[in-house]
Amino acid sequence: MNATVKPGKKHFPVLLNEIVSIISPLYSGTFIDCTFGQGEYTKEILKNPKNKVIAIDRDNKTIDIAKNIKEKFKDRFSFKNIRFSEINNIDVNKKDIKGIIFDLGYSTNQIKDPEKGLSFNSTGKLNMQMGLNDFSAHQVINNLDQQHLEKIFKYFGEEKNSKVISRKICEIRENKNIKTEDLVILINKNKFNKNSKIHKATKIFQALRIFVNKEISELLYGLINAFNILPIGGIVVVVSFHSIEDKIVKFFFKNYSQTKNLSRYLPEQNKEKKLFKLINSKPIFPSEREKKRNPSSRSAKLRYAIKTSHSENFDVFIKQFKYLIDIENLSKKIWKNFFMDFC
Ligand SMILES: C[S@@+](CC[C@H](N)C(=O)[O-])C[C@H]1O[C@@H](n2cnc3c(N)ncnc32)[C@H](O)[C@@H]1O
Image (spheres, rainbow, N blue to C red):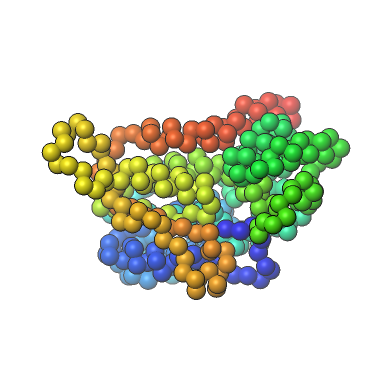
């Protein structure tokens, strides 16, 4: 989703009708909503009286919304305030699971929350923690060395001006802690993309958010663990909002999906084990009507696949995105040093 939001704007669930039409033919059962948010997907799924929902969200501000839904739907609904990478730890009868749904990114309520500081319009201390984090954007911007900042901006934001922006950050913070408004001014001064339709700070804010929330590892292990708890015939549905997320989801589904026209005469050992049946090889996009009604939906892409076989490992998948996981894990060593100085 875009990181600017007009005051008073409400959260519209993205691609909701499309998701309902994908999961409805699976009939009744348990669905896991990995990104509960305002509970709009959950409420829609619970409209079928035979469905149950287990909802997950890392943001503890969603607990109250979950409590209201629990009051209404009783034992058809439960909620866990955990990260979805830990989905394999939830207590569920695996054979009852029909589908697992991810609606990545953040909700309108989170962008509007000044404490979270996800918007360029926020002021004050940088934060960007969605919930259950180890560190904030304030710590990243005001402590990580130039080389690491540059990598984060380049790989998580695909920002062409990563070098100059990270250098300026290091210069300015020698005299003061950088706040949200300082970062926006600094980016505006040091980016020269006059013709861009997006706000100059979009890519740097996206990069910081991904790093602070470890969104790459969350998505990789979320998908793997979702696959592992899903019975054969179950469905995984993912709505992504930026190209890095979509690259990961696309690789996961395509690399492990059934190869059409695979010759049955091939020797068994030559046939790579395929784990999914992919219904559409192309993503589903919001309609023009939805984009007009909810401009935040314009970058959304929906992909889904049905599990057809079990797997022992996902080494190829992890290896493909190791360069991104390594950037997220850069922090471990650096933070250790930082926190030791800090204590
Ligand atoms: C786009 S909103 C989902 C909106 C939701 N589909 C609805 O109908 O209201 C994304 C939500 O996912 C949560 N989230 C993002 N990453 C997460 C993660 N790794 N684990 C658990 N929740 C996560 C965010 O806190 C946010 O509430």
